Each structure stands twice: as structure tokens, then as C-alpha cells.
Amino acid sequence: MVMRILWRWLPLTALGGLTWANRCREGVRPPVAQQLLDELFLGNDPMLDFEYEDLVPDTSMTHMSAKDVDLVLSVAKPSFWLELGSFEGGSAIVASERILAHGLNTSVVAVDTFLGDVRVLWERPPEERRKLLRADGRITLFDRFRNHLRNANLHYCVLPLPATSVVALKLVDSLARRSRAPLPEVIYLDSAHEEGEVLLELGLAWKVLSPGGVLFGDDWLLPEEGETTSLLEGAWISVFASKVDIDSYEGHASGCSAIC
Ligand SMILES: C[S@@+](CC[C@H](N)C(=O)[O-])C[C@H]1O[C@@H](n2cnc3c(N)ncnc32)[C@H](O)[C@@H]1O
Image (cartoon, rainbow, N blue to C red; front, side, top):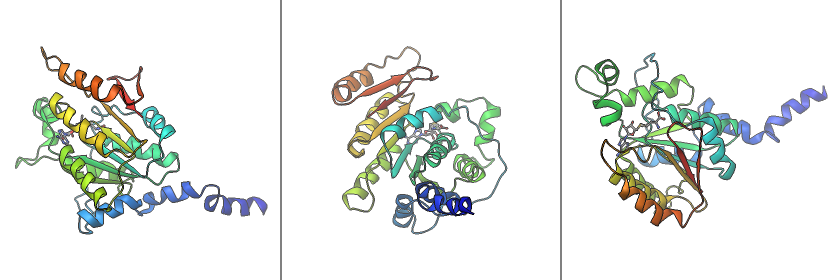
């Protein structure tokens, strides 16, 4: 009897955050995502109206691990997690699952052009490229992203924003200035991977990061054969290293950096 009462009370009190957090699994969007949905998408939810396909996710681009997310969540309890570069949704799924495990009601907003780029689409072998291209030339990334999130039952936990990272960061800045949305406490950057573009993304991301927030990412330096990375490395050292704690850790395939 007592056990029963405790069981009923625990979710509402001690486990209140957990219960609340898991409401996105039940179809309730976290607050910032709902605000953005109303403000940007005129109330039409891009995660609801699309053709369901039973697809095998391509996880080869997903280098974010549960350990990365746990490290970030040990220093930030974000209401707004902004991901730049989502591909088929692998990192958004890892982040959301850990966020829910931590009992947080975080809005994960996943930005991508959903058009791919040289590395993830155009220079891949034909059999891999075929999955990403429809016969009429349209790219399937946005549909693959939505299907994978739907299959993971995380389609109300993650809101996609089809845009370049630069457009999204400018938009986030403008929305915050107009008090339409808060600044993100966490930004995960895994998009352009082109040196000059990454530098631009990093500068804009740093500008919109909420004070005390975390900016982290994957493969910021992906030099082409014969190229140097001096521009980004030089800028990195002069702009960021003196102002932040930088934590780069081993055991990660491509070297993931967290800045707090
Ligand atoms: C390496 S993949 C991201 C992988 C993803 N985070 C995961 O874990 O599966 C890079 C993604 O960035 C996107 N992208 C490339 N340039 C971009 C840009 N300038 N703005 C936004 N997205 C971009 C590509 O479409 C691609 O989906």
C-alpha cells in the first residue's frame, strides 16, 4: 500500500523533472521548440507531415557519443540545445536520449541544409549516394532525418530547422534580440567542415552562446590533401584559447573539443 503511494508520488515530486522531460515522447514539445515552431513555421509541424519510410540509418557520420553529451550536461542544464549539422539525425538522437536520461526538458533544434555536401554526398560511392538521391534529383536527407527521429520516438523532442548554420545563427541572434526565444546554452557544431566557413560559424556561435554555455563539436579541422589549417588554428588560438577552458579528450575517433 505504502509502496503504491510512493510510486504514484515519485513521478510527480522527486522524479517530476523526469516525468516532464519525457513528455516530448508523449507528443508535448519542450517550450523553446514550441516557441520556434509557432514563430517560424506558422504552427505547421515539419515532423508530422511526411511520408513514412522504413529506412536503415547511416550512422557513419555520427561521432557524438553518450559520453560527450554527459560531459556537456555535467556543466550545463540547457533549455535550448542547438545542433548545427544534423545529417540523418544520428547526433540529435544521441543528444536527446541522454537529455531525457538526465531528466531535462531541453529543446533540441537541429539545423542542416539537408542538402549534404561534398563529403557526405557528392563524393561518396554510387551505392551510398543512391540512398541520398531520388530519381528526380531531390535529396532525401530531410526525409531520412524525419524518419529516423520518428522511428526513435523522438520526433517531438527535436525540431529540425532547414537552413545553413550561418542563417540559423543569425536567426537565433535576431529572435533573442526580439525576446522571441532565449539564447542556446549548448551549441554542437558539426556542419560545414570548410576552414573559412567553420571560422565564421565559430564566431557567430560564440556570439549567440548564452553566458556560461558550452560550444562543442566534431571535426572542425578537416584539411584537404596538401592543405594547412593555419587560418583556423591561428584564429582559434587568438580568439578562443585565452578566454575559455578548452577540454579536448582522447578516445574519440576524430577529437571532440568542448569549450565551457
Ligand atoms: C558530418 S554531417 C553531420 C553529422 C551529424 N552531426 C551526425 O552525427 O550524424 C555534416 C552535415 O552538415 C550539413 N552541412 C554542410 N554544410 C552546411 C552548412 N553550411 N550549414 C548547415 N549544414 C551544413 C550537411 O548537409 C551534413 O548533413
